Length: 184
Length: 184
DNA sequence: ACTCCCTGTTCGGCTTGACGAACGCTGGCG
DNA sequence: CGCCAGCGTTCGTCAAGCCGAACAGGGAGT
Image 1 (cartoon, each protein chain N blue to C red):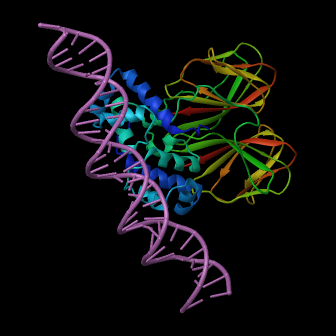
Image 2 (spheres, chains in turn cyan, orange, yellow, blue; image 1 turned 45 degrees about the horizontal axis):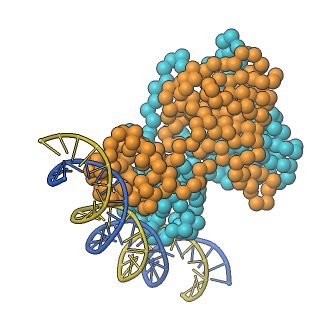
């Protein structure tokens, strides 16, 4: 259990999450309905925010409360040999395939996305170190980094860097996919 | 997403955790180094505590901060296809739905699994803190913790604790799903 | 150059939370 | 019964958080 001073952790988390969203301090304060002076003091580590204040910020940042208060501990994890990964079906009609093991310290947010044919969605580059995973659940997609797009059918999986410009495009109607955003 | 007023949740969590520990309000206030009047107002729901105050209480109660602020969500969470707040982008035919934000320090391994009707796959409990996310891509599944299984169709999403016995079962032929194993 | 807008930071004020001291209450014990 | 100890609540007082304004710095456009 981490029992360090929470104020510094909050300050760091606040700035980290805000920059992840790519908005300014003033903009975040505006959306959260708090004075930017308050937010400035919080990010500078001086200050002892109230729950309401933090909550308003968490809502705008669209992160659970705990991500702001619980410090990100660098997880030193040990996976013993033979653990888990090769999930072959023993004596049941199951198969398991590991697509991508999670690198240490990474965060993966799960989304489902849908799209209809039309203009491609141009996603600008996210923060460095971002990786995107796409697993198509319906339709056909054409996605990937600009210049290196691939076409994917149902069940296909692709991963590509998210810190460079990339696109998503529906080839047929009714496209859906699981999108995993991985941050370092 | 839980976006309810946090004060009531905090009030309830405080009282719950305190009674779990079996100490009185005055005793908790004494150990935490805060005035019992403050604690009284907090447990009554009136008040907007500062982080330092809550932190002191959390330390004494020996619970992570998030347990006080994040309301206890039902262990099995289901988001049906099309449900959830979809963030539609303005001028493109895209929607994105955040299924589960990644808690700090967690690792998420991505799998695809397939199954055919037959005996349910009985998965024994994984290490404590494990959470499983399931998003059905084909067929119909019946999965979840033993005694709390839910039936899921294409596009449905469910999360449930993986550190308790749970099952996966294919209801129809040709079942497939994305399985995300989340470790703390 | 100037202007405009936005960034993030420092100041007075006003509101509000935290404190300590009372309060009423209950239960144990002589 | 009286007495005391502990409980949880409700008051005033003081400090601290929050706010708004005013501040300096940085680009972009004229």
